[in-house]
Length: 480
Image 1 (cartoon, helix red, strand yellow):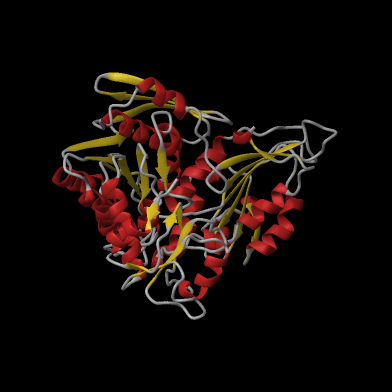
Image 2 (image 1 turned 120 degrees about the vertical axis):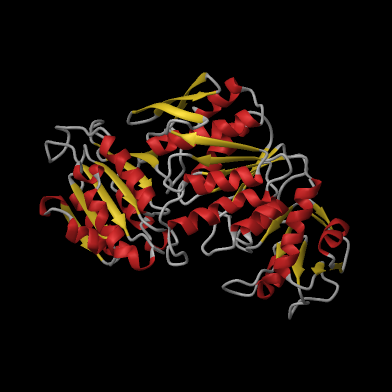
């Protein structure tokens, strides 16, 4: 199906098409480009113009460029614009303008990607959903997601992130959401903000881009909830709070967790919703209430929404539960792994440690008679001068006090390592490679292990080392 014709794209961007072409998709990376894609030659770590010839050789329908690249014929299929980033933004705006989809914007210090994926699953029970890939939530990710949106989309879920002040509102104005959601405000990106109030103001600016008659949904359990509320009431036709606090419009009154799922109850408009999520974690249950609030304000069938919620589970690196069979001859020789290695800040680490603390272990199945709860934590980045203290403070969490061992990776996590009581200290290494080489020998059947850290710490290599302990049978519980 054609996504962009040369005429449509030229009209949207004000650019000049050198030939007539039809594109079925939009790509910014020749490694993942599919035949028929429009290749967008962004300038980031490298200049995308250097890859235009390769993109065309791989079957790109055309390339969005600001000049004819060296080695590319002048009659090659190109769309020439003054600036490629601005051209991509124009494509995103045009795609949004021609779409009849209901658009939901999501931001937050913690949980925006998992909430986006939860929305993808739940809204998918009601129609065709288009949502960002991975964490495409920045200045090029948001317009790229919009530019890729099929014309027949019923619901679009747009994740919006930030690293510095002033980034969210412009992206929200491109997305023009009918519903905008803030999951949580927590210490993250503190290098660029004076305090958490500044982060809250930036997150609340997602409401600036709301369509006329739009709805703002925000977390009512926070010290900064007042900031979210004020912006929501100023910018939205309807303001809806969610959380566990008394007075929340969607109030979670009960959460029960098990090793494989969570069951929660929420009150809304005098009624009660009972819902299940295919993952343990109070934080998932709370964000699930926000997703159900989205469904309520969009007047979607409640039964379909609740049924779909029960099918959602986190993906790799986002809290996925993996069962590792250590011995094919012994079905009880199992190690459980929570793969949460994609990102980390103090709030998300606290939430994940709470999941680990509640996870059941197995006794009398390994070399060690008692199963253990073990955390492997990597540095939390972008916390500014407060970073050392925020890492050390993890030692004081109630959940940390229930763990058997905490292994630490990185110079900042050394502060946590030193703050732990000696009996709880595991290994400390500067790099994930060193931890990956040594950690498997510390683990045994019956253990439950959680791995979490900022993406740049590379803890996925630790996850891979643990998975490789299996006898070819490691699998995601959610995929089983």
